[in-house]
Length: 443
Ligand code: AMP
Ligand code: GLY
Image (tube, rainbow, N blue to C red; front, side, top):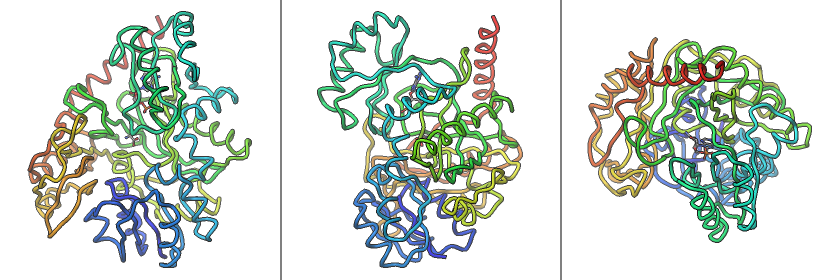
């Protein structure tokens, strides 16, 4: 079967590897030349993935049978609507359903309207004069979010980036005046405190089939310090839970996502594709921080390599509306560590050589996924985004972490990575933090 893959990051490389295991013939569209995707493809084209008509022309000319869309940009531009109007079914939501990620206002309003648990109190402003009176009355710490996409960099949090109500108003003014995220509207919501985790699920519009829970690390530096990033690495535990996450809590998060897709279907915007829920366990219970309309990056690298069932068959079930509620995964722990350019999170150095010894990495047992790099003359160069994901898979997080570190020994250049991700000490701190939060809950 011919499959169109859209996107050139490590997320898409892991998708392509999973499709290859199903014997798919891959045709890929990406803006950078990801060597992993390129070598796995029957054919690839370098193209801006958001030019949806051009992407569709190319896909039609190759006679692809089904498409899997990686990044949110083309979803927001309506790539799925265009491909489907031209007879290519897609694993990915329509433009209308992708609003669950593209518009933070849509996601919060949907939850409020339908009384979905996990909702965080929010208000949207288009007039700066209304902000200070609201903050004074609200009386709690807040988070400020542009409505549209900002690549994870638009969210500012009181106590971290904003230190007074005046700071909050000033940032809201900046968002409104500069239309950060594409609109002169800004969302303010209650600040939550707790431990975050990701839950990804396959969805066919009606059935939701959850994957193992994952914890990403957004901060650039070890000890969760420094600027927010797209994610520096992530881990998952065998059995699908996390060291700080109980079965009941996992099920609660699944329930929130199921209620969300039920509401979307009832409102005439059925959701199919991959739904990504970012949750936070707080003293006030489970909160939904945001939805994404796609696999997470790095989180796809935690789940796809341990997928037991045939990925292409799942993709077909998603587009045919015949998804099973119980997709199976190997009982394994995973640790992903991202190698990123020096300066990443502030100002990445692009065009730098990345040295790596692919066969030695494979010999350690680690898996390698290329991210936003370019390949020229057999040499790998950084872009401004993340470069490589190195994945360890084993029975325990500790063993998986060890394998990812063995793989990292064969990577060099003007790059850095977080060695603390998945280390026992780092996990213990998260468990202790969660125990304190639970303690304050029952107090
Ligand atoms: P987002 O782009 O919505 O994922 O936000 C980026 C990060 O900001 C999240 O992963 C959280 O760590 C943090 N964040 C977002 N919303 C909140 C909130 N309401 N309370 C506390 N932290 C938040
Ligand atoms: N890891 C965060 C994201 O994919 O948005």
